[in-house]
Image (cartoon, rainbow over all chains, first blue to last red; front, side, top):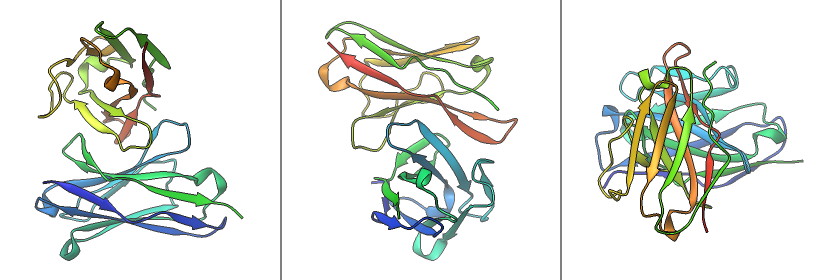
Length: 116
Length: 108
């Protein structure tokens, strides 16, 4: 079945960077894009960006412009999301989701905690 | 930027009908998708393209959209439907996905 499996929880210091991965299975990876969405505790879902897994083209939310980079490794059917200059407000669960073109399915999420 | 507005909470008795609205400027001209999120879990798509239902989602879930409001309707509500529900559209002017603030459905 179609599945997205994300890397595990991360704990980071303010100012550091984090890389999360999202491994796809059950379909041809390059046929569908991948979105990244985050959810701070008790907050709404917040779209971060998207990658065309075939071409590598990306779109980013202006909120994260300059701090987020989404890449992919087609040989590993894996998408990556790098977020730099972390601050406490970046503490959240980060999800990947297949662009179907709705968000379906979603990965299980990865908690990133930013604290000194 | 495009804004989607949802009521923070909706309460309904078991067996009754719940309606969750999502307001946005001319949302009826866009495709609205709805997601269900239970505590500690990832969101799940329950309605796409305004009113289509993915396989595995009960027929009790339906959707519609017109003018400035999209609506998710859950008929014969069950205790297991208790969750947060989010609407989502793609805003072509900004090339961004936009989510509503979410509605917490409480089954009384």
